[in-house]
Length: 457
Image 1 (cartoon, rainbow, N blue to C red):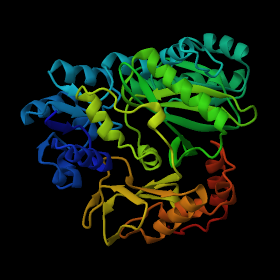
Image 2 (image 1 turned 90 degrees about the vertical axis):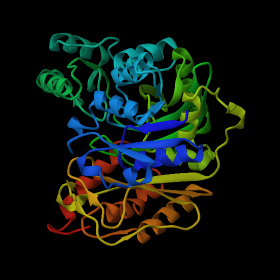
Image 3 (image 1 turned 90 degrees about the horizontal axis):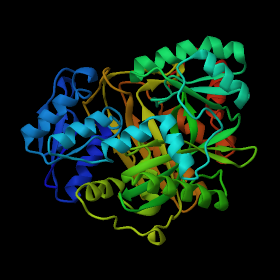
């Protein structure tokens, strides 16, 4: 692998460029009209324009990305996360063009991207899944019969979905009949596939994911991440390892993730996501992400393993260099996602020019960001500005370091979630790690009723 095209933008494009540089690989960026002066475009060895600012006309056009790779003389393409990263047809198009796709084969992406098929693969590997329908459903009458067997409440999910789209929690048959058509329409709009499946709704659960690496012949895990603190099913704060599971559960869950990878001959970095029932301690597989995750840095900080570099080496044909016994976790890491949103106005996105900027530093503080003084938060893409990641010898030290570093972060010119994140880190339920997937949203609702209108963050 000599020249790598990064089919993405923002902080993940910057992250990939740096990993490639460390390996002596030349990098090519792609940039829409809005990103001509963006940090990833400036940092790469070369840049190719790919069209209008709207993602649907640039970063999401597979043919344009493949054409750019050919034009640049690249021999590999890294998709990052989001955009085309889990599109099996894009992975196939890259391979058909004679280029290396940095990720699993298209067939594996397709198999694991369909949540119903992924559940079937998990069951075949002996990995526990949430009780639910074994097949996709496209008819509300079938859904009603299935829900009666599973037992209410149930969760409707898009078979081809992700990112919280097409999900509904229903308490009884009346709600199910009303919710099914709307959820199916949302899924069809978002993913081109309106099929649904349903599973038992676990009332009090943690969202825990296991990081894996595989070379097609064998796989290893790099422990787990705690991802329960979510707003509208989007993660806000992540940790490694999870403070909410014991060593026995950890061992069983990580072993299950490796078995799943072995079942499909997984190749590249990936993440197996689980729900952990707080009441029973049971864990259930829910889906697999066949790409690098936004929150991968917390795993890197506790293991010392560069996950993007591992992706690149595996894609280049190298066998997995890590043995399971050699992978050890040390200390605790926390990541907070800093977004250009106004929490006091319903998390309204806040695009605009960046004024004065100060980034935190010091021992064991990492900032993954595209921010530059005088830069611009674009209205065309997601609002993520930076990821602040810290390490501590234990969780208490990591929390304290995260609070200190957040206090040093300054971005003027637009609202951000910085102050809100610091407030979350101070909450008793956070410091004691007594939370589940519903905790943050419940707290935000309570907070909204007590915050004066017009207050700013």
